[in-house]
Length: 294
Image (cartoon, rainbow, N blue to C red; front, side):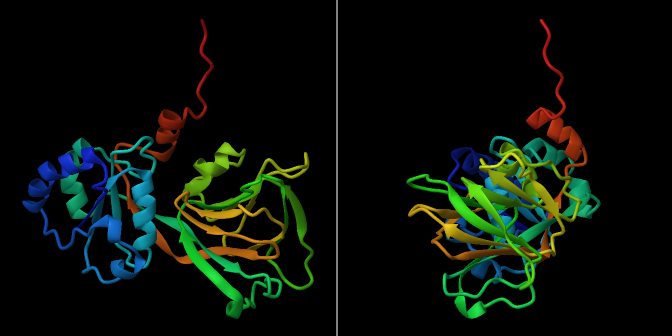
């Protein structure tokens, strides 16, 4: 077992001091890396493990999911944050369900991820089966979403959007404050706040949600994850930024392209047996809540 604890939270440090000996009596702890120095490269050097317990909030689970994306180690999130949409367990839940967790009988779900590639202004137009990797300047993986935001001085962006791009297909001009491409996991995050759909985590799809688009006719789209999505920035601001899972950022300039496709691996999340996705959606986001009377 691996412990991934967000020790920048005081409440996590206090809980871990009590939890660690309890866990050590029940499982072999093979690693407990310092998350302030933890990243994809040294995650690949961790010993094999049957489980990684993540203590923090949903943001901690997002970050560790990206870091461990190729290890196929199930993540169990213990919530010390706000919503707890990905970190489904409390400390009490962890203790109560430990026998099932240790036996591997708790259900896991594989969450779709996306790969993001940024091409410089000299790159040829993205074509799904021919990417100009010599001009790829930045790449990343997201579990929730990738967003292009207008940035300072907050003038509207002009973007050419291509889905399943090929030399014969035309691009759609999008004018607005930005655009979000989310996985089903991320559909309840930035995308839903911008008017995007809620997509069940088990659905193989990506959501394309415009941010304050200058058109009444542009509505959010749901597309196949393997379709390939290309966005060329025709007009950008000095502060225009690409944002990965709300955590990693990169500056974007005019004529640069962002290409998004599904990532071949999946993040495995251990599910709390007492909580369904829809129950959690209703409780934590007030989905389908009835209006109050009186």
